[in-house]
Amino acid sequence: MKARARLRRGAYLIPSLFTVGNLLCGYIAVVRSLKGEYEWAAVAIFVAALLDRLDGWVARLTGTSSEFGVQLDSIADIISFGMAPAMLVYLWGLAQLPKPWSLAPFLYLAAGATRLARFNIQAPVQDRRFFIGLPIPAGACVLAACVFYSPARLVDPVTSILVSLLVVVLAVLMVTRLRYRSFKEIDLRSRIPWAMVALMAVAYFVVAASPQIVALALSFLYVLSGLRPRRTPAARAEARPHPAEGGHAGG
Image (cartoon, rainbow, N blue to C red; front, side, top):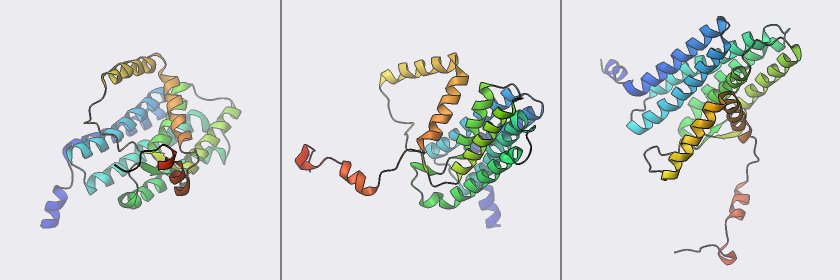
C-alpha cells in the first residue's frame, strides 16, 4: 500500500505537462514526416527541444524534481530527439540511398539511446555544468535545422551522402567524452541589467528576420563548442594570476 502511495506521489503536474508536451511534439514530427511535411516536422522538433529545456528549469525552480520525472523525460527524449529526427532525416534525404548510407539514422537512434542511458547512470555524480557527450536534443536540432533550412526533399545523391555522414558524426559525438555546456547554472530568478532587455529585442528581431539561418548557425555552433581543447588542471592553475604578477592576493 505504501509503495502505491509513493508511486502516486512520484509525478509532479507542472514539469510533467512540459514533458508530455515534448512527447506530443515528437509524435507530431513523426506524423508530419510521414506526410512529407518536413518543414513542420522540423519546427515540431524545435518546440520539443524548448519544452525539454523548460521542464528541467521549472522542476528546479519549483523544487518538483522526481525520479519518475527523470525516467519520463528520458522516454520522451528518445521519441522526440531520437526516433523523430531519425525518421525525418531518412524520409527527407536518405531513403533513396543504398545501404549502408540509408542506415545512418538507425546508428543515430542507437547512439542517442546509449547516450540517455549513460546520462541517467552518471547524472548523480556528474558536474551539472556540463554534459558528457553531445546531448541528444542538440543532435536533433542540428538535423531539424538542416531540414528547416532546405525543406525540399533531397534528390542529389552527393548531398544525401553528405547528410548521411553528418548523421554518423552526430551519433559518434553523442557517445564521446567531449564536454558540452548544460547552462543549468543559469539562475532565472536573478536580476539582469536593463540593457539585456534591449539585446533580447535585437535577438528576437534577428531570429524573426532569418529563422532558418539562425537555427542552422546556433545548432552547429553548439556542436562545435564541444570540440574546443580542454585545459588540464595544471594549465588552469598556470592561467590564474600569481600574486607577484599583479593579481589580488588574499583579503
